[in-house]
Image 1 (spheres, one colour):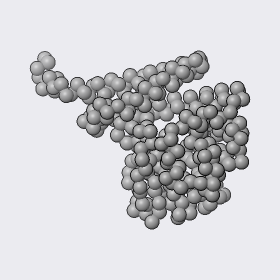
Image 2 (cartoon, rainbow, N blue to C red):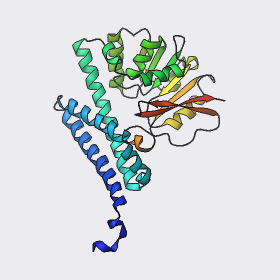
Image 3 (tube, helix red, strand yellow):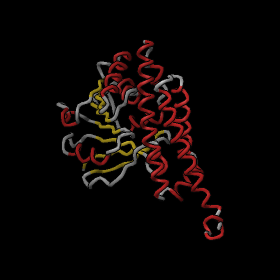
Length: 273
């Protein structure tokens, strides 16, 4: 029975199942540890280990090569999407846990800001964010290191948006604890409800925000034409952790790729023509 398919004797095909096994194993472990963490806070350290393992998995050169060969297969794409949803939920839960711990312990946020890599800080420099900038961060999360780092390092005014009301509440507590409350605040309002939207100089769309093209379409008509839009995303194997940049924005935008930020996600800077 095994001789009926040449594929079964092709060692290269095994690479697809090696890739699938890695994706499915990570998905299972992350889902289970996310569930366990609801009852046992100590499991968050195990969950962080699996997220770190996922980051190593998606930046591994051998895995990237396997994705180039098999990433277009329907079953591989389907399981990659499931892993992305699982990891996004895990990161959301972990951010809330870290924010609660930080607030409960009354510790300073500044020691955590140093964990943001220099390559991410370089993103802010290349986009010319400074103390005169008004930054809108879409998808800031419950432990908003990027938004707080922008405020601390540049002196810019930052408004972080998130659809999760608990994330917004925790982020504002972290901003208060950090001493950055004058520069940064967080809200759950819709973009069109922002009174000062025309004063925004820079918009950052987080990599875990799914509707990137739709947001670009919406922003085009409401922000100042000179505003810069930075979109973080992950295509290819990076899509197991980040939402990809799907669909090409219309020709009203001028795109410029930014250096890969720690290899965990990519970023592109959009300017209106």
